[in-house]
Amino acid sequence: MTTTRALVDEGAERLRSLAMDTPRLDTELLLAHAIGVDRTAVVANGDAPVGAGAEERFRAYLERRAGGEPVAYIRGLKEFHGIALAVDARALIPRPETEALVDRAVGEVMGRLTSGAVGGRAVRVIDVGTGSGAIAIALAVALRKRGVPAEDVAITAVDVSEDALDLARENAVGHAVGDRLAFAAADLLPPGSTSMPWDVVLANLPYVRADEMAALPVDVGFEPAIALDGGEDGLAVIGRLLDALEGGLGPDGIAFLEIGADQGDSITALVGERLPGWSCRVEVDLAGLPRTAVVRRAAAE
Image (cartoon, rainbow, N blue to C red; front, side, top):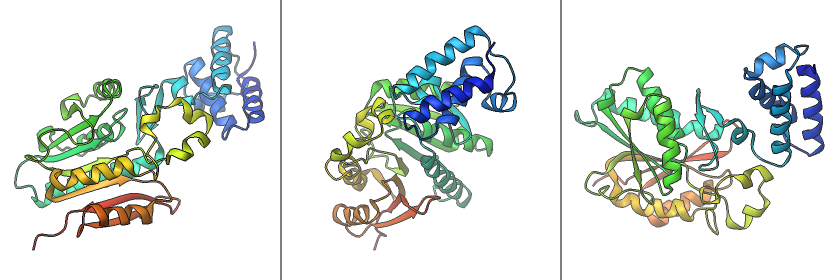
């Protein structure tokens, strides 16, 4: 039988020849998935023999990866903020940088609960463009770990794609937070947002410029274009959300919006244009690049 080390070396060399960014990591993950073990088991047991069935599955997975299909789609899952989410072509694959939105949301919600800022009612949170449900579900899981009762925070996950919402629902059930989330099909904010405005708005919306779509890596081409294409300047969809915040964000509300690494100045200018008097602070990610726009309503005079 072929050993795990031999298959990893073979696969890594194949992917390296195709200029894949992380050939060894990809190969280890695919072999682990084929065998049915964790990646650490593959790394730690290089001399372990691999059964014929597992080797056959691995080679099929490797062919798919060589064709550009993302590892997350081949495995059917992606780790995000300490949880494993089911992923497939119905929604964008969650990225590590988006975890910052969850961290900021947890801090914001906990602050509102402990300060009594919401006057005893539930904190109203919406995840716009939820996709796989990553942000909303990770937030719900984090709040549950902190002992926050489900009735204290009302989280709604919204997406224009019914297919994406189905995936998000599946993930919510899988992490036992279905009772902590509501789902709605809507283009950005759902109807009724003006009568019951949101306290916290979270959004990882498309922000890739239209003319840059064709230059994206091959594996990104497997993901739904609707979740990536942000129009001519990359901020078309985000701009529409800013317009909706005038009536949809509460008096003391806050919005956390993920942006592209080169959009710090442009999002600040766009907020100034669409929401005069409102504040926009751009926060950087771990690489020191602009990543999150924090938008607040103008203070009442």
